[in-house]
Length: 422
Image (cartoon, rainbow, N blue to C red; front, side, top):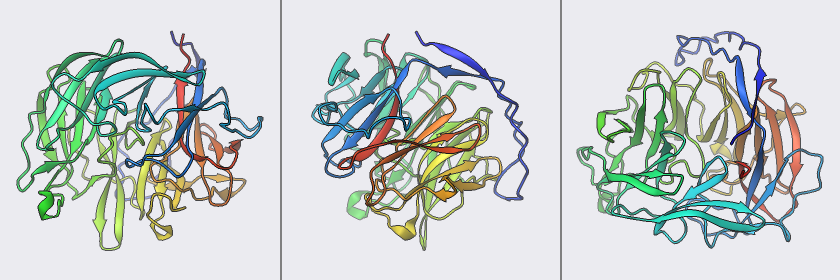
């Protein structure tokens, strides 16, 4: 059972408007009185040995568990201590509480794992029934503490399939196909899409789009769409296009590598998306307001050039974002990625700084090495000609401190917060 204590916070101060037309200031202010703190947990560091992973790259992957990522420890090394996982687990995974959930490398089942004492432990697994899924290529959402919904395009990519699982023993509760219609001109659905559950109105939101046949270029034929789903029946209650000609910033791997959706304390649902402009990709942060099932046409929380890679909610009006500066390169391993804090109220973005200087640019497009626990964001910087370093951003004060440093020879992929098994 989780151990919690409560921290009483000051009321969030009212933010001053900067006159950004694309942002709305109609939301009620967020008043956080108390927030549960997680006490019994550890960090799992995922690293690669040869190059950054993600996007289906097969790399040798090691995992090491640490109780702290503070600076008062020797350089972190994996010699004799890390668990080699890539033969069984993919880098793309689901974490909840003390457990990892995924379609493993074998690609024939759903499974639940722990990683401890340099071992991968199988807690429960279930072979596919009717619907089958490829490792890495699916999206997911939790509708309660033990119900996990997984969705993806089928093998022919002409239907969207779903499976509802009991995460306690990985039994299949139900499965089926989503009742949506292929948009005109489309032949294929995007591989996984993105799935999010909003408890306040008890709805699943599935973000997807369709593409033309690959023989004709495979181009997107419609803007990003959102299907609003009843989680009890999995019936689609509403299916609409975005007002902007855009698509999600992540389409193939759900949110198994990086997060691109979040729900704030006011129950607004946000999603990072992109448009293709003459000078390259431009990212946007769009919002489906609380109680609504369609996008707010007046809101765009991010209008800077380049691409949002991952977004992580920090509470109140702030998120931590891992973004790309396209002028410095767009490749997976280019040192063009940086961290910035975005205020969703004012739509102002401020790059994270340490000792007055912006953090170095990182390589690794899919290695959005961010984790958040107890009001602190842990962000990994994998800079050129330097050892990987983890910085700690205090969401209450806005201050950044230097945390643990890793030895050279490792590519830092993911920082994951995992509860300790009781």
